[in-house]
Length: 337
Ligand code: PLP
Ligand code: COI
Image (cartoon, rainbow, N blue to C red; front, side, top):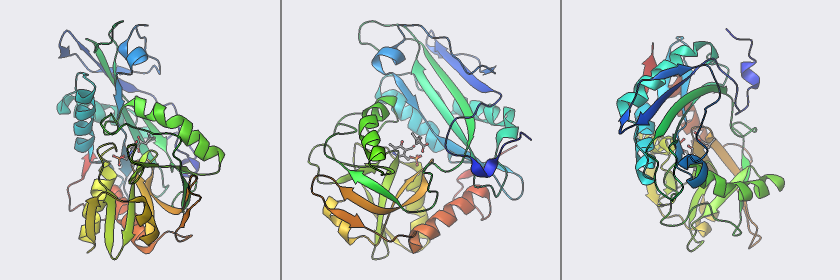
């Protein structure tokens, strides 16, 4: 076991022993390589460097009380990566390859999987990018698919405590018919200035509105948004947000807990009517929202200063399934031996 202070981990990069790699060349995927280098030699004209041909994923593995390692919903991440790859004309890694590489990288880095009860987990980061050279704007003919892992703690330093969010009309994250629904690096580059503004002003993140009308809620930085009222879990439907696997899971869990669920357009004004609000994602898990400030209108939407009852139930239920504390009746977890 490594000498790691598991309980104090933040959401950051820590070097582990191995990563796995696979090249797509001459129209086919090659052999899986195991590497102990953190570096990648890359052609200076690679399309990833010039034209943003890049997509990534984020998923987690957890150690249970029984000592078993559970991987959460990997198939959904594999499918989303295929979708992102197709969205920007990259070679999509087949699901079987994704699975083999995942298992290999987790097994090879066993000592970095945080123990049960520490609140930490193993974050797994698959990344796919165009390594082949082009100077004209065209897709590459060669791709590299890499998966690395790193042990992580909570994404928002507050942990499971309410955070505040900023609504600003100065920047958009994604265009209405753009790449917002894909997990491509360009969306994150586009979010950096607004996220910096939010952080500089003391907010945990930006709550993005739809780029066209600025009328509806899109999502919260690196997480989806949900609100709760009248025993209903409500989350925005939008073509420019990432389809969150955590959100999809919470919709099921909410139903299971006897709540109604709605995935539909959510008007900004509706924020006033929610009893609870939160951000959800692999990294963010559930992060309750305590306050949302609209810096154009000056309007402040305030929620409870403590995690809401339903958000707390959902959070506990999700973690219980991920760690195996509760039976996984949905078939979301896979034990990695
Ligand atoms: N939205 C964005 C922009 C994200 O980067 C993420 C993180 O992956 C999410 C939402 C949440 O998605 P998931 O629950 O699949 O991690
Ligand atoms: C995730 O939740 O997995 C993310 O990718 C969020 C972020 C760190 C980009």
